[in-house]
Length: 255
Image 1 (cartoon, rainbow, N blue to C red):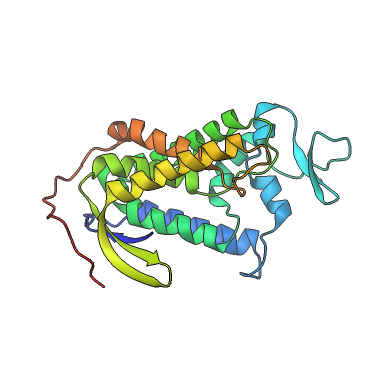
Image 2 (image 1 turned 120 degrees about the horizontal axis):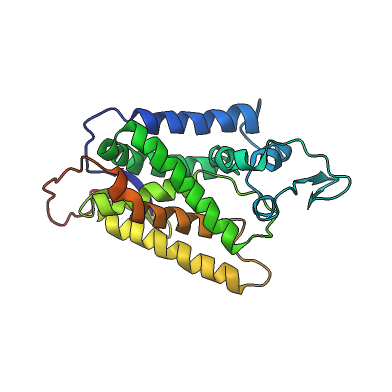
């Protein structure tokens, strides 16, 4: 399922949402991947500016690349990154690949513009960043000794999704659905799409915990869960102008 657009118009230009998208894209193209779009991002840059749970749970210790390995607090590790606390914010603007970036920005655009419209620009900035911090906090709590950098806007975007599902429970989303070699476009309830996504993160996160060899494929599922829960809990504190729009009944496939 790939959401394409929702049916809630915005009253104001979503300046913050557009700015966040632009910043994420520019960081990826100019800093992570200078001079190239294809291929792997700069691993040294990700290690330096990504959020490494081990560094947060072991204050004073820092991680770096030694040879081809990522090690923490080793005698020969050259530390070139910023202070650990800064990486909690910088990691929200890094991505592991082009598809990772595109997926996060798609969700941020579809759902972020309405959440921004409901709370205003300054509040939305605070809500977005706090959602990212909450996401990282749960990821660290679950895996405090992990030395793999946590990167991506996913946690902060998950906070937006959690807020959206409470603000607009009757919203509908035009969604692209693939069925084997065929596809269709249909309007689905936002609660179905976002609810399915959230419980999928819980299921994958639980599977990751029970798999001793790690089955998450590098995905920080608990960051997604932490961000979404923050959005559910905090949205009423930030939203100041929620619309009560009359939505129609069930929709049928449009393609």
